[in-house]
Length: 118
Length: 279
Image (cartoon, rainbow over all chains, first blue to last red; front, top):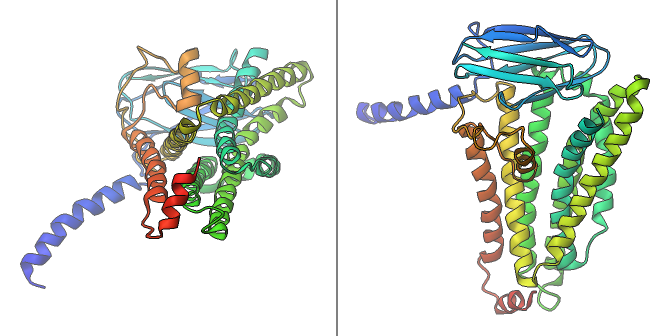
């Protein structure tokens, strides 16, 4: 294998590896902001959160109620059941600026909130 | 609260019922085999109970995204079963009682296995969510009756729509039935794979990107039509590129596996005659 072959191979391999590594980025790096939301008495607290535009954000939802709730949002494209007295992690973003409402599907009248992306 | 429980349970029931209906149409029309469905439903109910009971612990797996990983895996597995089942369906049609009864039966059994397993997985997924929903209201006397009533109505409507699809497919002209059924399977496979990708994106196992298109101005996902199309076809107002690719991939896999089963090389002239004899 001569030097020219190696150069050609690595110029194809590296971008491919980069693509694979990018797609399988399981580990959350230190730069991902973390935001906490509580569910208590079928209400989201805080009901309005602000996140930066075009940024991936880790939402930690702590269900303090004894009964399960489902965090759902059409605009954010997220849906997850959170058992009673337990917590769940949902990743949202990157999102363009705007208002993204979410609600609790099990108690939609009270459990409502908005993600403001600025 | 009543309407909410109707819609919620209807949505979950429909997702499983539609898949089951199409698979049942195929097995009934081709081979008069329908008994597998009861095993699929029974197995699904047992697994959905086990899944829901252990959801607390499962949710904590993989840094609190265990639910997404398991749901995505169930969907991917169901997609693979539909793909293999479609291949087996067309392979079985290459043989008949005269030239290869044992091979034919083997492919029929493979289809039945895939169909029953896919139904088990679908019911496990959807049933567990219904159980978690209902279970949450057990200790709440003031809501429980309303929620159970609404859930029963939603479940009945979902079941009825599934049955409607079944008889609707059976009423189609004979030479359309199989093609329409396979196209529906392709759509369901695309939908399941796309939803699996969405779950993995939610869990950050796939890097998320911005939406590929935004049709929420024309057809919001929260509208009745939007929700209906979401259940039936997997309509998304803001899908990511990865979701779209997965959807197309799911469809292509089913259609390709059908073609592979139909046109795979076989030099036996009696097989070709058998294929032409098939209804």
